[in-house]
Length: 353
Image (cartoon, rainbow, N blue to C red; front, side, top):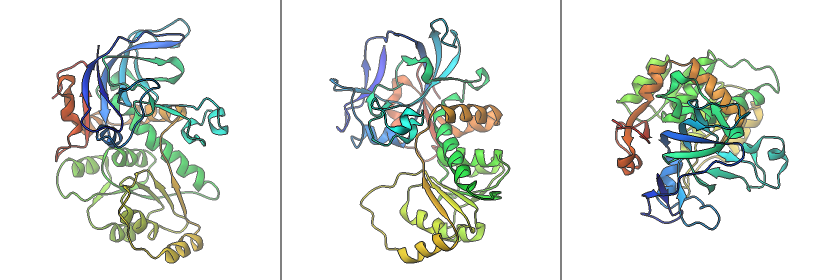
């Protein structure tokens, strides 16, 4: 079968490689790959900036945003041939740490976790793949065109869960949410905010193109001014920060409502120092009981929350979030950013568009 592979931490090694067909063992499902989402982490791996090969192997099958159809499933697995499934990305560490021992492997404390397509485990960028039944999540058959959005939706489902948990340390009834960044994570965070009945505002730099339409069709308000101006105007109870831009982070920290919560989901680039008044930010956080949290990855609970969120969403809106689909034969095109791109998907068994 064919798989998209790289040699981690080496540039210019992306290839469509012939690899042996997988053979399920134990409770594993054999899955026909349908689609693969491409995100910033994948592009970092392709650029040689990140990633780990499986032990004793040079090449890594990449891809962690999966969608497939079960070919075979063992008795008692809870799955049947034909089921649409998504594979969970992270696996708990073998020690395990306290978090992993309690099935909160997205919060691993010792860093010995593994991740499909990222860290020491082959990913889902192949025509066939296997996944343990306990790390597969069934998805509504009606979502076949958009089910590949499950993994990024699980990331924002976790972020919203963490926001609620922090907020509920006391009375918590947020009304306004600001999402910074209108990429897939930002837009899906906005979707979940709308589903919670919040007044959602989305900030991004672009002034035309699909992002504006996606925000408006969602029923949210789009902004493109600087972050400090927008945050001061919106005065949000909750911020989901999805850009990783240092100036944006500190601008929103200084402009939340009292008892505001800022959840950071964007990973910042290193080597870009900025000047800031740390004392003023500290004073703001303390005197207003503000909270700042980081959130990444997801566990099984969040995948199930994501499945519910996608099933409740407008499928046409979700489909329009995927702005480009490419066939497996043109896999390299998916890792090149286009001006109209929001989410790019590789069709593992189709023609693309």
